Image (tube, rainbow, N blue to C red; front, side, top):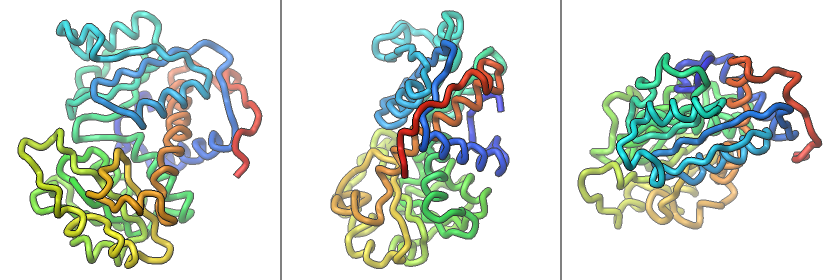
Length: 307
């Protein structure tokens, strides 16, 4: 693995190995003994993904090279390729990129001598989100095989939906989708269920927000929760062991009742926590594969979390 672009590129063994490494990071702190520079090139807004990469990098002892698209030469017409080459030239050892294009990574393929991590590609891919979701599910059930997982919401415009559905199926889960008519995605060949049926069969319900910024028309939201979202009434019909997930940001009162965001079944903030450990695992794996670091470069520090 030279770059982390899609979970599709990973074998089941590689996925499980990264999850194990992430668990190791959850229980201990590690840091680099040599200077390593990471550049987080986010061309779209982000809170959780960007900040969890920053925390992951700092916990590993990496130096962050700051970048804000709105204050950069992007405003002067600089391409993604030239921006990436600039950071490579000034000494970045790792690039983390989010961009509105579904296929931005094709412009960089074979043209960089440092690793690249996909932090979001348009509506196509969000592989690090998938990894933290897999870790959250694995922590809960100790397996993914044969679990019934429903991904519900704006399937059409969600990069999370595609990445997760394919990875979960690869690991043996039974994946179902649930969407408002018109929000389906023809390229995802999974069975669709109405939300009332979905909540009764699933072990995991993974909610998605309506991505207003990717719609070319106004979406009426006043009736979304009772018709298609996770209401209090639907939550009561979940299996006793079922959990609620959401990649966030959350439209409270639309795809999920606001009182359910932090209910006992919710693992939404657990997902966010796991994002740091998963990203630490991916970063170190890539840096090792490129020979930028080795086992002797990583210093294990004191335990930081006991449970």
